[in-house]
Length: 527
Image (tube, rainbow, N blue to C red):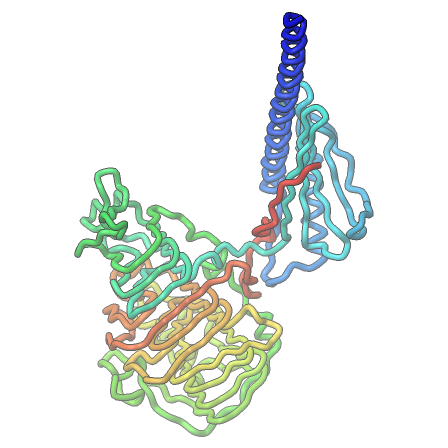
């Protein structure tokens, strides 16, 4: 009897073990197929990215993409997908669809096999009629009966890589005076025989990376170093995890790492040929002349604007405008105006000669004192001189006292668009207690200097190529005496710069229209 009982028990255990083993095998197989399906979907995503990268594009100097331009990019994308014929499979033309979200157009590949039998992926690009500049992408991977899907959304927009930086400069850059930079900075200046492209003082914070066009090897060949590195060229830290600095380091402040040999000088916005500001100019009428004249010098003495800093300072007989409001006006070259307590709406356009001239009649050095800006400040695109050492005195925008920027115009992305102008935010001669500049949007100049108290929510673009000059012409964030510009080295003030890569690039900068992934839209779904 006991034998029969044991036989029954062992039989039940055997059946249970066989069932469990069979279930485990099925679970393992499903898990494998699920992973394979997800990998297939990710393979489809990489193929889709390649299609996007090879899609023909075109350029525009407007900051937004029209529906017609979006349609052209969509057509280019569909044509590229069809002509590529992934896996040798033909792709049907784009067709209309309707779902719970709305109506739109889609183009879908047939299942593309790869690897062993049963592994494939499909790519679906689609967009809704209500939002033609947004393209959606679904890539579905399959292994047998199991499918997985990845989803990504993309915008048809102007290329705006330069807005990824808080400061982008073609010249040298110095960051000093308790400045806090909430993002990466970059200089394409590449003359290590003169010095490093970027320098910071110990009281500064760069909450981002520092990128220079100069290679580490070239710095060493010229006995220069930006940071203290170990034998493997890695940054050195102490036992508490603090970065180790030496007196030879040109980067003394806090930062998130240095990249060497970065070649981004050709990104749109860094060359005069990228700029065409004529559309702004066409909106404006010439400002009425003023009979009030005030003689000033630039650079001026720390004692005041009416005294020269040195014998090389330039004299300007400024036409004075006090307590006035302007809308859509242009300032003729040779005006060298002084605007005091004025308000500017819409566009303020500054004229200058198209080719370089050292004559005061063809240039514009303008000072703004305690002014309000409810629109955009834009200039002509004058050339600069590779031989004159004083061009930066001639075409200049100089903001003193407190400047209030609250752009309510149709050009919200543009704060200052003054290519090849010397742009000075803050007094160059002495610190003005209580003064402050607050700006939102891009600030473009040949060389941009920020001093005193300032907060900028946007990107500084210093686009003048200073590689022909052995000294001076430094993008100053702070009040350092750069030895060749207008600073006299005073102390005081705090500067804070916060970039936003989601901002639109200002109109007037010619860049390609591209298909760009939208941050935080990637997701993984069960198909």
